[in-house]
Amino acid sequence: MWIILFILSYTMNLTAQDALQLKVKPGKSVGKLEVGMQSSEASEVLGTPHRQWFYEDEVDRILAAGLNQSDLYYFRVGFDEVFEFDLTPEPYPVTKLYFLGDHLVYIMMTENRSSKGEPVIPKGIRFGDTREKVMKQFGEPAIRLDFEDGSGNYIYPALGLEMNFKYDRIKEINIFLPVRNVINSSDCD
Image 1 (cartoon, helix red, strand yellow):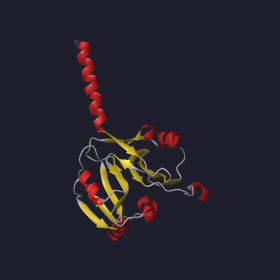
Image 2 (cartoon, helix red, strand yellow):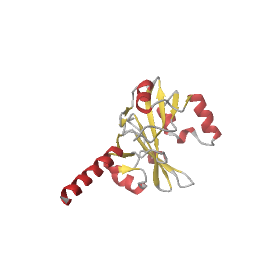
Image 3 (cartoon, one colour):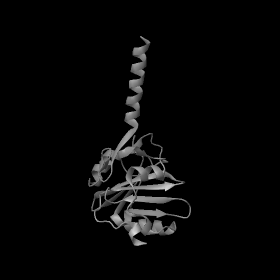
Image 4 (cartoon, one colour):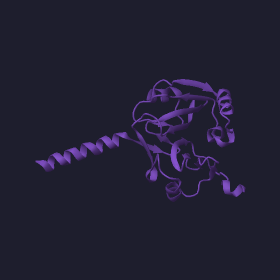
């Protein structure tokens, strides 16, 4: 009897853990959110955004924060509208969605969201993993940005994947359409 209860308890725990793991397909999707879907379809998945603004407003926000557009890959992808979410339904830790011509082109997920969902990308990479683990699983990124404060970005354009680090740990995972024929940042030195 105890064995049956143990097996049932273990199975229920695994099912609950699976429900909180969010499948991420670089260059394609985050759960039911798919790159290329229309803004109305994205809103069906995540609900109404807390805030919306346009490209020019994002430029103003970036400049006011003292950031450089060239360090933010979503400017390279291109967009004309941004949806920002304070709260999203489980298991989505989505912070922002970027649209171009009413089509989703960039999905930003941030670790410090209140969501209990955990995005897991291929090769088992997830929030909190180290740069070393990412390099071991994906190799040298095509674009690598390292900043004085210890943060940095690893961008794999051919995969449609960007991971941003703080204190050597993944804090943000971003998905976008894959880009081919990207010059490796080390080729530009």
